[in-house]
Picture 1: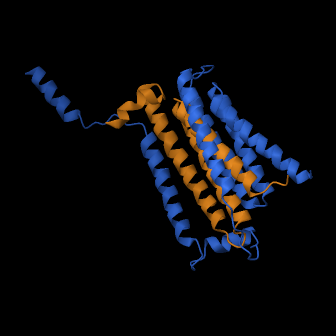
Picture 2 (picture 1 turned 135 degrees about the horizontal axis):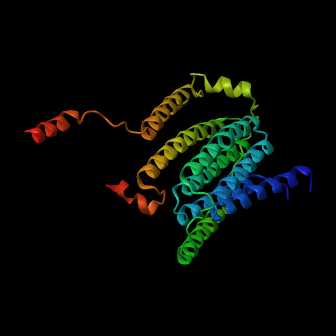
Picture 3 (picture 1 turned 120 degrees about the vertical axis):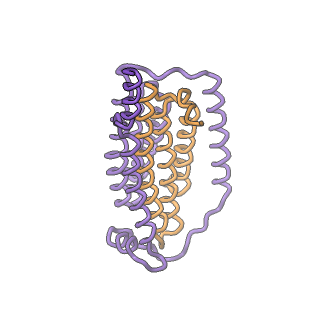
Length: 186
Length: 103
């Protein structure tokens, strides 16, 4: 058993165990922290697969962005020390059963399927090639999706501000209020 | 055994169904969002594994992963804005209390 194999199994165990703990713990803050470790494990798997750029993006966006966002929203919405409500046992059992059946079916399909590997030369996945391909407008370039994602992020930014904005007490009701005052004085 | 494509597909499928289990059993919107993040991550891992082991001459899986990460970030931000707004009006982020969203 080589070192690389051991590291792979450690990362896999980290990812899966903290994923399971994340969906089963009853304390929401711990769930967020376990989610963090699960995401770090996945980033480690990307490193293990030699996709350093994706691993860096995973750490920056998920670990540095989304988990922090989730933790802040927990602070804003949850009372300290409050546990999540207990679920019905029957719901848990049936969910576990459904999930297990789905997993077994998927794995059966995967192990029966034979994958064909392309005989072509492996491309070099470094940041230079990724950047060139992302901004190229040729057939195999990704300039259009790149622009669309930038529009989507802008729309999400504006949408978040609009949704989370506190509504001001508008002064539009003033004429009606004035009318009422007039009636009262009359 | 030397880890290969099947091992990573196993992890990815397991992570996907862990996320589905969380989505079924949780009733708190933030924890449901966490389950969605797990599901999206398993999909990313799948794309990367197929790119690495089956089509190493192309980089399509890698770009799909990048775009999924970007869209997941946007989705999480919008979802949390909605959750905080819901908490302001209902003082609770339980899905049972959010059924007015239907109407």
